[in-house]
Image 1 (cartoon, rainbow, N blue to C red):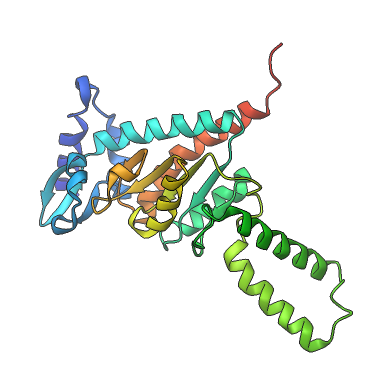
Image 2 (cartoon, rainbow, N blue to C red; image 1 turned 180 degrees about the horizontal axis):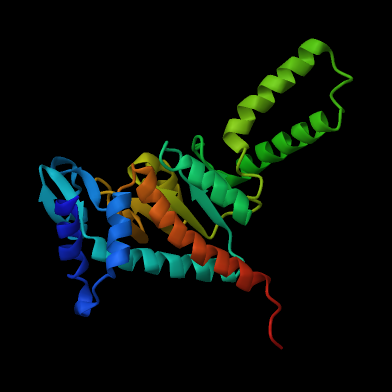
Length: 254
């Protein structure tokens, strides 16, 4: 831990224009393991600018940039939400999925926490049709309108609902294409990022040193396989997103 704090202090004091990171923030980031990337051999060439040093073959990310870029991403998300823009949350890894689901439900935003369905963005029209079918089928079951079918048919409906819940469970709020997608783990969600890029939808992504930052409009270099690291980042983004929600709901001054 002493070595970790020494590295944290070095990179924290290396912030632009001498704007060093407060000690309590450094300690939080150290405990959360935000600074740890992947092995040096996994580093994407374009991510080298976000690496501070290497220790025992593991890349140590530049947390001064992590703090700065987290703040920029938070400000961007707050602005989008203030204008009532839709944010799609994406995180299917064990470290991210619970956070993504909780934040999506709290802010009433669509989310993908189980599996990204190819074409979610680029084939949105078809997705919307299937989503509406899923919602109607679920509503019919809950209202008892499926009781008229045979036991065998009802069992088939239940199986279909279970399968579709995995795919569409968090997408009920996606009534239109999102204005931005927020991704936790860039290399684990390359298809989602590719679809967003094709449609010129901005991407905010928490990413380690093995991803290509040029595919991300708002990269956040951080340990994306650690639950505590993702928790540290998401707490800061969530605060800004909640502020944007409140501003969007506030009456406009005449």
